[in-house]
Length: 189
Image (cartoon, rainbow, N blue to C red; front, side, top):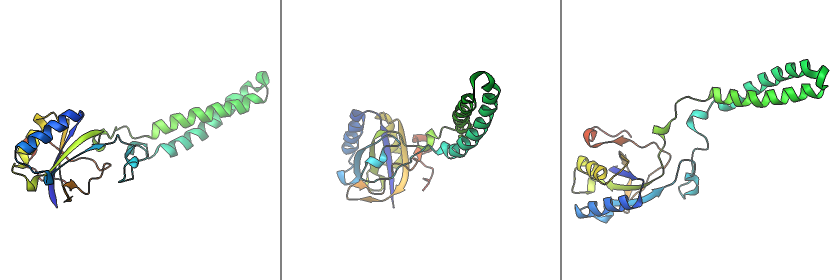
């Protein structure tokens, strides 16, 4: 396994600047790679495949929607029955339908996890990665260089580096974020 330090850049020009600075510092192209990471939910369009098809916080939304729809339909039918002397029998069906729809929406929203999980998702970015084991700088120097070049996030991980690229990069794996101050901590694997 190789120690990989990567910087995520919102702007392509900043990623290019980081690549130039890394080369100037003596990092050879066999230990550098750069690529674009698609937004969450669009990784399946990449050759690597698979992606999350729903937010991690929405795992319980289906059950909440079913319970909400059942409760809403029953409540709507009761309200419709009360209105049926004025509106006729269609009021019962209409009340049940509106109740089911409203109940499903409220039930799904109520069952969702309140955390955003933003920190667990990799944003769309221009990623520059370096095999820190093959470079002339320390891990802390690589991290500081990425931060100086405008990286909006920097990560450190253990991975497979082969043929001049981060071979086992997975866009749906949460990044192991670091900054120059905590670069000496071991990476989570």
